[in-house]
Structure formats: C-alpha cells, structure tokens
Amino acid sequence: MTLIKAILSHSILLFSTFIFAELIPVNEKALANVSGQAGISLDTTVDLTIGNISYQQRPTDSYFMLNDITARYSYVGATIDVTEQGALRFGLPETLHIDELSFGLYNSKTATVDVNNPDDIQTYTIYADTLGNAYDGFTLNISGTSLDNGSTKFSGDYVNSATLEGNRNTKLTIEEATDINISLTSEDDCSSFFCDNAEDYAHIVIVDENGNIVTQAGQSGTNNTSLNYSFASPINNHFLMNVTLTGTFKMGGAIEMFGAGNVAYKR
Amino acid sequence: MNTLLTVSLVIFKIFMNYLLSLIIFIPLSTLAELIPIDDSGLSNVDGQNGPAIGFIWDDVYATGENIKLTLDFDSGIPLVFTDFYWVGHDSARKGDTVYGGNVGSYDDPFFLNIQEESITLTDGENLSRTTLVTAFPEGTYKGSDLDAGKMDLGALMTLEHASGNTDETWLLFNGMHLDGTYLKSWAPEGGGLAMSGELNFHADELTFQTATVNAAPSNNSNTAWQITGFDLYLPIGQTLYQPATLTISEEQQVIFEIAAVNSNTAAAFYAAPTGSVRAENISLNDWNAGTSYIEGIQLQHLKVQTHDLN
Image 1 (tube, each protein chain N blue to C red):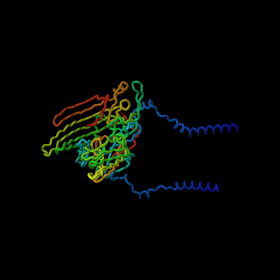
Image 2: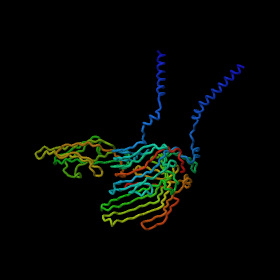
Image 3: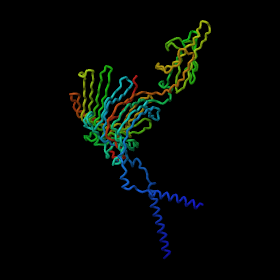
C-alpha cells in the first residue's frame, strides 16, 4: 500500500512537471493577431472629504493639522506608460477641473491638560431661568461632573429677567472631555390663592468664557427641562489659515520616474 | 604499485572533495564576510550619493482658467490669487500657444535618496547623520545661463477692497530654474523636523507689477519693479554642525531656528560656501537703479518665532 502511495505521489509530481513542460511559446503567426497599446489612459472624478490629517511633533504633544479637507475634482487625459529607458512616465491630464480643494491649517495640542496653564482649562457658566412668580424656585441637578463649588446641585429662587445677566448662574470648569447631564426643575412652593401656580418656564443656557452660548434647552410652557451635552476636551487648536482652490488647469507634458543608480553628487 | 595507485586515488578524491567544498562554500563564506563600511571608510567616499529615485519633467506646462486660490488668515481680508501659469521658457507666456518646459535629464535628474555623511569637529568629536535628500538637477550650478530647464512662472494676486477697487499684483518669474537647490531632512532628537540645504534660484527676469483697478479704467495706476539677471544662492543650515529646525513650542507657536555657531563648529562653518544675491539690473518703472551684488552671506544664528495677534 505504501509503495502504491509512493508511486502515485511521484506520478503526480512528475506529471505536474510535464504539465509545465508542455507550455508552448506563441508563434509569430498567433502573435500577429494580438494587438497592443502603449500604456493606459486615465479619466478620474474624485469627491473626497477627510476629517483631518495631522503630524505630531514627537516627543512633545504638539500637532500640525489639516482639518476639514475637501477635494472635489476631475481630470481627463492622464496617462501612465513605460519608456524605452525603463522609466515610468506619468502623462499630465489635459484638463484638471477643481470644483473645490480646501482645508484649514492649524497647530494644536493633545487633550492633556496642564493645570498650570490657564489656556488649557475652560470654564462655563450655567444659567438657570424659571420666570416664575415670587414663590417659585428651581433646582438644577448635574451628573457627570460637579460644579466648581463641589456640589452637583444648584438651587435658587425664581428669576424673572429676560437677560442672562439677571439670571441665577453657577460656574462649571472642564478639564477633560466629559458627558454632562443637566436637569432643571422649577418648583412651585406656593399653594395659596395668591399664587398663580404658573410653573410655566424652565430654561438652561450654557455660556463659554467668551460669552458665546454653547447650548441651551427648555422653553416657555415647560416646568422641567434637561440637557445632555458632551463637553469637548480642551484641545488648543490654533487657527493659522484656510486655503481654498477652485478653477481649471490646462496641462501638458509628463513626469518620468526611474531608478537613478548612483547619482553623482557634488555638494 | 596497486597500493600506491589506490593511495593516490584516495588523495586525489580527498583533494577534489576539498576543492568541491571550497567551490560550494566559498561564496557563502564570502557573503558572510560582508562587513559594513564604517564612518571613517565612508569619509573617503566622494562624489557618490547612493541609489536614488530620479524624476524629470518632460515638456510640462500648466495654465489656469478661472483660478481662484484663497488664503484666509481670519483677518477679514483674504488673499486671493486669480490666475496662474507655468510654461516653458519664452513660450509667449500665458494666453498664446504655449509649449512645455523641461527639468532634469536621465543623467542629471531631480532625485530623492538617503545619504549618510560625517565630520570631525575641532575638539575631535565625530558627527555623522543620515538624511533624506531631495535635490534639483545639478545643472551648471550657480547662475546657469542655459535655456534648458528654464521655465516661466506667473501668478496674479488680487486684493478686493470694500470700496470696490481692486489691487492686483503680478508675480512673474521669466526664465527661472532651481538647479543646484537641495534639501536634506531628518528627525532630530528633541522633536520637530531638522533640515539643511541650499537655495539656488535663477531668473532671467523678475517682475513685480502692481495695479489698482478703479471703477474708471482711466484712473488705473501701475507700478512695475523689474530685476533682470537675478541670482540667489543661500545655504540654509548645515547637516552636521548647524541644523535648521522647525518646531512647535509649548505655546503652540512655530519656531524656525538655525543653530548658533560655537567654538567647536566655527572652523567648519567659516570654511563653508557663503551666500550671495546678484541683480544685474534693477528698475522701477522708468527709473534704473543699476546693479547690485550682495556677497558673503553667512547666518551665524537665526531664530524666527510666531506670536498670536490679539
């Protein structure tokens, strides 16, 4: 049995060899029917967006970053070929039409917070607005972090002011990326005849250090409102510039690439 | 006799086996004996830069139509380039029939490769560094007058004012080439990007032409500043003893610095080629400012740092 297996396996191996040996070159007559072409031609349409491309300067934590990259362009007539000298020849497209090529250039740091660097820490102000009557109050509950005074609750009497400056507020300092839930309940603590029981307004507004409203929730006609907000980590992005290119280029010629061997180098 | 013959045959066989063994194993031994050339050995190698990837530009041109390149620095006044061309030298500029220009040849290409070099400083310290080299063709180096490889490059910069007036500035480089320009780069120990190189820029004619385009064309004003026979040769840092570095500070400001020369590097620094600027003829409109040469430029130390404008 072993002998049969050995003969069989050797036969397979030898037969395989004969199969390779049976490769027959295509003769001139057969080749005459084969048509060829010089290289290939490319027409391309691209619609591409990239969030960002960054370069980190190690060992420090700074970055160069191209942000919000958009590339929408098309070209016709590009070619790829190999020359008699063995160089790879890239023929430039006849027409390159750029609908939009744009990006923002930034330098930035990672989310590591230096508590000694004021630029790394962001402080927000949370305004609570209930617009109730003199007997109403409110309670603001926070989860996910704590207020600057260490509490997760902020209570007060009613507010009846149309401006943020007049409203009750508390401070919240963010040192890392945090998901925060804030709920505001306006409380009717009066049941007398003189109270109108008008628990009719709950409004939360979060404002950054520059006075810009980051987010808000609630409106007239609601007694309670809640807000889920993800505070971004305090990455310091320094804007340098935006670059935008549109238009059409008419082009010609080619760029060749090849192994240059030992290039004589005088410098 | 038979015994002698037998012994001879055995000796012959042993010899042949030995010879066969040598033939088989010598190549392996030879390969095994390859020893890397050390720095001192390499320091004797001159004029070779190792295998490279070469590039040539063959008959290349590009002309823009309705081009708009906007650089917005968030200052409220974007910088807008509205026209562009890159064509072969003396090809009637943009707008007419253009032909392409050439850069490099198979024997003298634009190339990329890896290079290692070393030097011994005054105090005997031996420095070596491996760099990525990006180099334009050698050409004839420093102020070539050859038409081969020259290109015309033009860009129109437009600044639109709220008044409706538009400032236009044409930057025209006629008959330019960068032959001899190269850049070496590597990653320094302290982070960032280190580099050294030489800028070798030649233009037959440099023109900075400005115009304020008012609502009434007759009120347009034009100024043309023209330099003919312009050559700029500027060494930027040195690979081994005076690297130029590009880093970002902790305050996220960009710092470009060419290291200071010290007593240990001074000898090598002052023995290196110096920079020069040559302008054969300078004119501003009809006023001719003559010829100007600046020779012997050496950067002992340079530090440029950005700061935010508040």
